[in-house]
Length: 311
Image 1 (cartoon, one colour):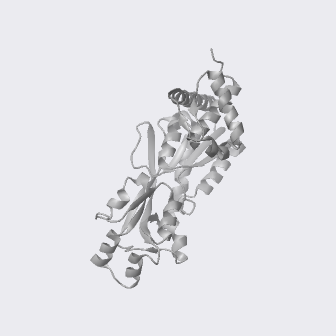
Image 2 (tube, one colour):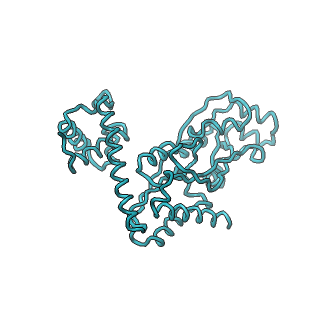
Image 3 (cartoon, helix red, strand yellow):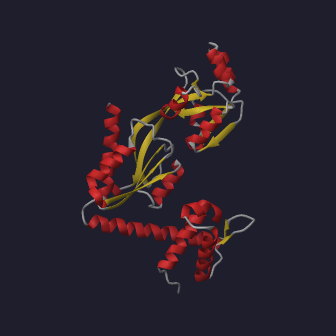
């Protein structure tokens, strides 16, 4: 019989971190440990379990079938730990404990959702009894973190809704089509060219797109692209591609504003081409009823957004 003590739990935490980082080298920053310490921890866990959990070395990192099963069970184990923490927290009928919030990247410039203001109000509401953890992830990762009970509330753009989660739309983010000034489409627009000629030029441009939008941004153009499409989940990566002059793409107006004001980007046919993305708060179903802190935090986050929108 394998005893699950504090040493085994720490080993499992390291193991899951290595999986998340897709290798020991990548996990060093995540764990704040050097590669040799991580490798020793994995070896000790394998010896304790009597299993080979992963293949690691020059050929790269790969889970064994047994390693995948151990990882699945470890996720369930840590989810159970978090459920225990949440249930015991609720027994007191107050909001003490931890609140983990996840958001998508590059929303810091959004004036309609002031996460910093919301964190301030959460701290004032719950006093020093509340510890807040903050994560920046892709929408897919946010939903996975919610399902694994690693975060409590997520803010993101969710094109499809998961049955186990509750969603609360809070505001619409406007995206415009941008290009660098030296891009052919941007040069034509500066010259006063519009209509079919400019649209035809756009069809031949390479396009940078956020992969979690499921091509809804491309579809809103209303025509087939003839250039290459580069997909990424990271908004900053899209900005680099567009700033290079070789790509055009949609970006939120609040994020692109810094580059537009600096003359590094121009919106293309802004009156004609734009799209909206619904920013949504997500959390596990019914948890706002079982955990006082979730209900209060959701209300505060929503109220903060409404207050900023009204200004």
